[in-house]
Length: 325
Ligand SMILES: Cc1cc2nc3c(=O)[nH]c(=O)nc-3n(C[C@H](O)[C@H](O)[C@H](O)COP(=O)(O)OP(=O)(O)OC[C@H]3O[C@@H](n4cnc5c(N)ncnc54)[C@H](O)[C@@H]3O)c2cc1C
Image (tube, rainbow, N blue to C red; front, side, top):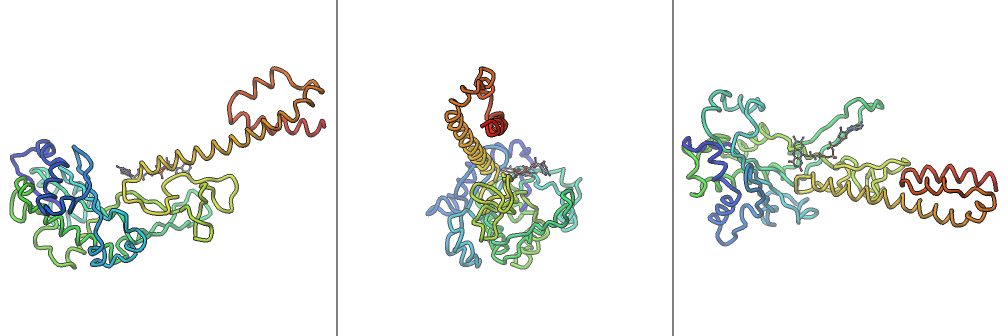
């Protein structure tokens, strides 16, 4: 949804005024009995303001999101981002220009605000299919956007709530023109059908793809185990967003860092067990080493270099002793 903001306010001034705190105030004004509705957690102080919303049970039932009620009832469903600018820039989204017949030139003359509604817990899953045995060939990706009717219903509900939000006095004092400054989709777009058309034509990806190699039990169409090891392949782990079994209701980078930290801890632990085994082995063969005159300062120094070096060293020395004994 794109609004025209007061011409007197520069984008910077608007940015300072339209803080996350202000959105919280608007939320309170809309529903004093439930100050956390419609936006229940607020993050971000300057620049774009982010807010996350978990729909209540009756909302989820009304949009037919029974899959979410059964499996993801504790997740936030919507994220609203307030951009103190045009986002995405219309020149990069031809459908918006075609749809509304705006040109880049007349956009640049005025100040705008964009409210984006992100579907955080979609019921729809897409597919990624390997198309060739040649790894350099691109896979076939089908994101199946809005295939589940409830996903579209949630977006329609969200757009309607955004309209309620922008009609609040604290918000509307920053906008100009009829319909609280709403330019896109504009007050003529009201029916479910028209809103759905608008949503389909203007939706863009938030680039949070995940789950294509999900971590689950082997018999559950999974790719990796809880140690992130690829089933049926030796010596291969996957460590990235693709292992997430569930689409998280957040921007994913922090969770991906946690996956990487956990994976590196597991790898170090595995190396450490090899190292401990080697230490036991060394203790057991020490008398033989002394008998054959094999223990000297050189080998002791090599042993203390690094875990990676140790692993290599274990196998070379093992081979020597087996042959000798
Ligand atoms: C424009 C944009 C904005 C975003 N903004 C945010 C944001 O604000 N907050 C947020 O949390 N998330 C954001 N994301 C999403 C986030 O960047 C991704 O979810 C995250 O980077 C995914 O991490 P990953 O480790 O799974 O994969 P990637 O970060 O994509 O890492 C995969 C790596 O593998 C390498 N690679 C690929 N193929 C091969 C190969 N054959 N051999 C060797 N290496 C290979 C790639 O070069 C890459 O370095 C944004 C994404 C985009 C595109």
